[in-house]
Length: 194
Image 1 (tube, rainbow, N blue to C red):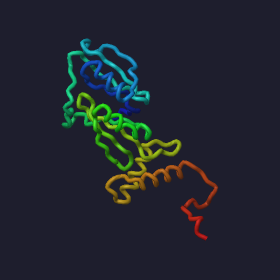
Image 2: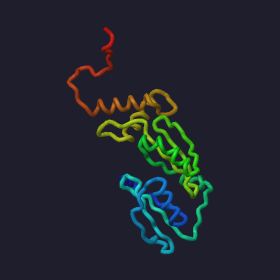
Image 3: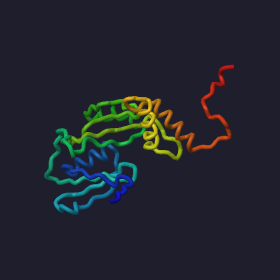
Image 4: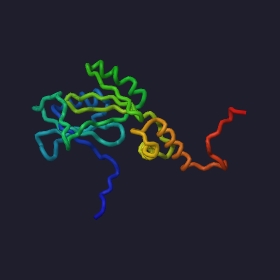
């Protein structure tokens, strides 16, 4: 038996209400361009609309004009989607709370130690998260590379969650493994003491 190796998310499809509610939220609130539309190939009574979240992947929505938005929180039982998180820049994150409040939405703000997070529901009750990392990975590495390394440091040090010191040390470790130096000693120094 062998694995089926995936290489990333291709798309996420959600069940929406009417077409305009989806366009107004995904493009009009989250800024995802509405890139194409066609019938739902498995249910011709529904439309299938596609949005670009900014990374070359797709968020797609099945819509039907007779379905009305229901803002009650979507189910969170086993097998259900709890939330969808989207990466945003620090500049966008710093403006998001104000921009949501202008629409009558008060988000919950959380410090997740390795990223800042803002939570709110879409017009259909799906929990949406806007996340902004507190670090940039070194050249040639990804956020996942840093977090994998930081996790190992967290476990070694007996910490409950990954903290900023773990991330900083993880970045240093990744950088040291990926770069060469003429120095025989790469340890930390204090040139200020004489």
